[in-house]
Image 1 (cartoon, rainbow, N blue to C red):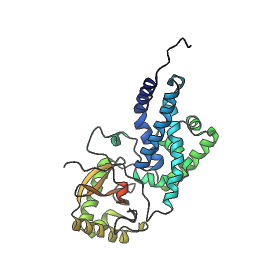
Image 2: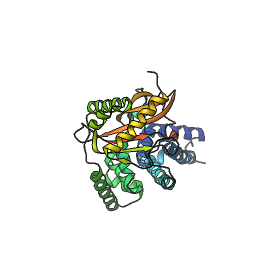
Image 3: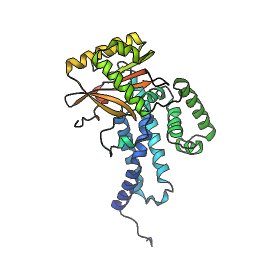
Amino acid sequence: MSEFPVPDTDERLSEATGVFVDHRELLFGLVYNILGSVADTEDVLQETWLSWTARGRGRDLDGIDNPRAYLVRIAVNHALGRRAAINRSRETYVGPWLPEPLVADDDADDPALRTESVSLAMLVVLESLTPLERAVFVLGEVFGYAHTEIAELIDRTPAAVRQLAHRARAHVHARRPRYQAHPRVRREATERFVQAALGGDIAALMEILSPDVTVWSDGGGKRRGTALRPVRGRDKAVRLIGSLGARGAVHGLELRYRRVNGDEAMVLFQGDEPYAVMVMDLTPEGDRVSGVYIVSNPDKLTHVHKEEA
């Protein structure tokens, strides 16, 4: 018989639970930025929890020197496995596919406010990376992991990770040069755009939209009036946005400003139900809208809740 007391199953599970909860926000941010889907992220966290608690039930957790690294490794590898299923579902998706927006409630304790935020526009760019490139980019560029640490997490050599990181950075920076508009500038541009769009002010829309603006509207085939492919150019964008504004007036949609993936944006509600999330991307100068991302697929808005005005 062992001379040391062995923790019972309940004690092990309680210890494992506490460690997992301490790291849950980190894991959520990592996985969400790799997948671009809140629902899939929650599924991956559940899988991570099951893998972790299986370890906790089987033996004492003292044998794990770095629980944070152990949990991140499990979560990232589950996320990479989930990417394959997401990519298959994209093949039959109706219309443009946009990431599921991370909408912060008006609550200081909302986890979305504390999650490392990658803008919706950046997530669209990340969709063009391979799963491994995206995981390396998120771990290194967003969360600050060193190449040697990433190598251990994804079972690759540091040299292979450096190559993946170089390709990912080059691709991302070619499509999205580094700049960040001041939050006040973003809010003002968003308000100007919203007033022009919902007010049907064509002249104001033409002024605020850049000539090469692109509008992505993701309804998943479940909302009428969404375009089946990205709409490029100011004239076409004005027609599409004008029609959206007209429908908003007809259906009595209510507007709320929220932070979406860390940026000022707007959420439209029909009654108490979310109707669409609209995010604007600005030119480097911050004076015009270069991209509009409209997510109206109801399946991607189930976690969006209406707060009292």
